Image 1 (spheres, rainbow, N blue to C red):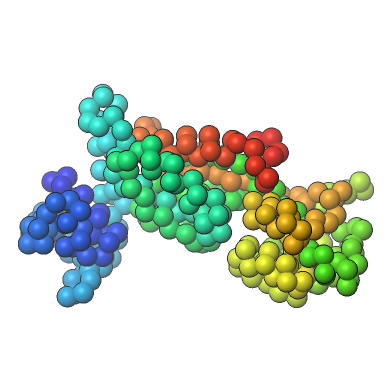
Image 2: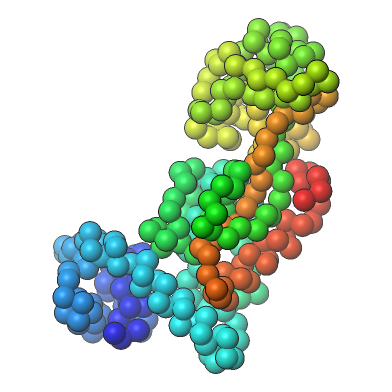
Length: 300
């Protein structure tokens, strides 16, 4: 199986155009089409649906894609293990991250990273859905959750502290709760699926079912709704720290810590040898987030 054909196929799958993928690899449209045809002929299956405007993966192509990506990564790993090939990691780094955290904290980290590794390029997928890394063809997932999947490798990047806050206007009009149980008398803004908030108290842990004026599937939306005075919200410090600093939000019930096992993780498929591009990116993020900020002061 020709590795150049595999490289072309993976780029076509990402870009949706054979000519554009071929151009990246220095191939003419005619040669690119011939390479894809040859790969399909060797495999005995059709990998792509072709139209005059765009190509898309067939069902067989979707199944084949993660294996093609793994083959290419393993070639780079093998070269790196014996000092063959470029010293600097190269190729395409495929990342998926939560929409808000990715936009607010991963994207700002990429500029310096790509300056350090000029032979790397990044495909970044921002979504709050938990995706399958292998099936999706991703090298790394950034997740803000409790890690339960033992089949994946994970490195903690930062804490994911959760706090309660509200706008000064809301508190002026409705009063400030002094105990978590008082939240049941207040309007709240919750993330969908997280309508029950858990707290540590001197008499034991308690769970409060919130009275939701608004529910949303996006943390930034919940934060902004709270800024507008719609209600009290449970938010991550990485999401709300600027609004707390500016006074648009005020933290409440600080003496009753929110119970949460979530953290920010870099997650990648388990492998005996880690692809150089994955290793350097994870190491970079660990160092990047180790620096004290307004939102990750707590010991990691």
